[in-house]
Structure formats: structure tokens, C-alpha cells
Image (cartoon, rainbow, N blue to C red):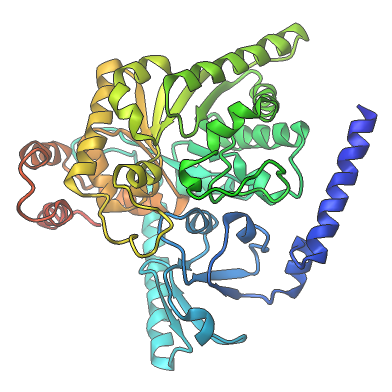
Length: 459
């Protein structure tokens, strides 16, 4: 153990030195970045973004960067205004330029005129007043106008996210992205560091439910120190998430052991990402059971209960929904990847990012099938993608039967404002009339907008 600890220290030092020599060390970045900085870049990975000090970063502008790409999702989770698909921004912007980044509209204004600055200053003041309204909503129950409870959960992944659980008034953490801890580290986090983070998360939750997703790396979430990383033509369809960790069971076993220890005396909700076939669930369960037996042998304090869930992101599971619901304790729909695979559209391809609508009739029918299967099998179903964070799409999800959705903390206020004004029975009738009807008329998004406008539902 002593030798392993010393070697780990050496590896950590060597990695930090190498990153600094390459100009990518976190300390070096922090020293060189001015206060209130806005980064303008052609592209960026989620791990690279996490190298920058959050207290100095005020905005992110990318020439690439679709709305559902991981770097954009991570930036929003950190509360950083981000605008993607800004063609020519790098060549037009110069160091020291003033830039307005409108994260809500996904737009930027380079070297803005004084009247535009004044207009945005007023917009910021209006938003502050609106945030005060959202803060007041925290005290109100999360129910529709006709009294139906809907749990509004938040997505998280770092210790800095934890204070937002109380500030946003979330019912719990519906998705804790454990891979972010791996992405900010210079080497694989030791089991003790993982255990400490997971325990801190549970302590901060104060009894509210927390769903931990096992490490989801691969694709565009690359760890620079992971020697087994390979170049793939289609990384989104490749060696990632549960596929990778089942092939490298030592990585999964270490994380499972840390989670079991951290959750001693409390419930552990564990979720497997990118499940493709039910055999993967059985393999993961075998690894979990092995770790439970190991810790029991040494009299460790174990969780009071362990609930195993699967993320539904791969379309193959749509053809075995009932079997899936019986194989797990809960299901969480990863709407970003599921939409990507169902519609055959690369979530990072900016040429296609606005071509297809997640509120289109075909995709809503898919989501309805999943919700119905959960009810049929008495299995809890949550949705934890970008779709849950917009009031209009959250409204659609609730109308389709979802009673638990997870989103970024900043989205909970607007979604709750919509929820408390929603006559759910009328929306369910709306879907009965329109969801299975021939899609020859207005797009579903337009119909949903008209439904909300007619009833003064704030979107």
C-alpha cells in the first residue's frame, strides 16, 4: 500500500508538470486569465472547460458547439452563459474586446454600442426581478393547477453544484455526473477521494434523493491521462460509458466500492449509462454484488438499500421496454442521446443542430411509450436531459405522463412557474387528440405554444 501511494503521488506530480509545460496547467490558466473573462474559441471539450477557474469566467463563445454537446451542457451547469455556432467569432474578436453573451437566446454582440449595452443592462435588471419571483416559488409545492405532484430534480456533477440544491428548491439530484470529478483531475481520482465526494453530496442533500450515474467517459468526454483512449470514427457510437467500464472492471469496482462506503446507513441509487442490452445490467449487478460481499466480509457499514437503474439512451431498449422495467428498480431517459440516435443526428454537428425538433410527433410518441411502460410495470421513470429544462418541453413531458424530471438548477424556477399554472387534465386531453393523429397540420411545438398562450401559461 505504501508503494502504491508513493507511485500515485509521483504520477500526479508528473501529470501536473506535463500539463503546465504544455500550457494547460490549472494554476497557469488561473494566473493568466483576467477577471470577468469571456473565452472565444473554435471548439472546446468539456474537460478543457473545467481547467478554467469558474470565478474568473463570465461567458463562453464557440464557433462549434451545438445546444446538446457536452461542453455546452457542462457550461450551463456551471452557470456560465454560452453561445454556440458563432461562425467567424474567433477571427473577428480581439483580446480586450467587450462582448455581450446572451445565453438565453444563444447570441453574442461584439463591441456593442452604448444603447445596446443599456438595453442589456435593463434586461439583466428584469431578469433579477424574475429571479426574485422564482425564489418565492421555492416555498410552494411542486404541483400542477389541478393538484398533481411533479418532482423537479437537478443535475449536478461537482462539489460547487451542491449549494444550488437548496437555492433552486430542487426535490433532489436526479443525475449526479460522477465523471466530472475524473475530468477535472490530472490522474484517476483515488477511491478515498471518490468516497469523500459522494459522502459530501449525500450530506448536502440532507435526506433528499440522489441518483449517482457510474462514470460515463468516452465519446467527446476524453480523459487525457487514460492510456486506453482510442481514436474512433464514430465516438458517440463507440467504446464509452458502460461498454468501457465493463471492459475495464477495475475502474467500475473502485467506484462501486467508494459509493457503497459513502452511502453507509443511507440509500444508494445507482444508474448505468448507455445500456444497450439487458445482459449489461446483469454484468454490472454481478460486479456490484461482489463488492457488497467484499465489504460485508470486513464489516463495513453498507447502504440501507441499493436501487439499480438504467439510462434509456439507446433505441434497442425501446423494443424490450417491459423486460427492462422488470430488470431494474428505476429508469432514467437520457433525452439528449436518445434523440440523437432515434433521429440519426450527431448532437455535436452544428449543421444539423436545428434541423430536427425534439418536440416533433415521432419523438414525443417514443417518450410516451416509455412513460406508459413505467406505469404498466410500476417502475419509476425520470427524464434527465436538456429537454426537461425548457418550460415548453417540460410541459410536454408532464402531459405525456412524466412525474419526475431533472434539469440544470437555473431551469427549475422557470419550469416551476409553468407547472403551477398548468391544467394537466386539459393537456392530457390535448395529447389524446393530437399525439396519434396524422402529422399533416401545424408542428407539435406550435400546437403546444398555442395551448399555453390560450391558458396564459408562462413559457
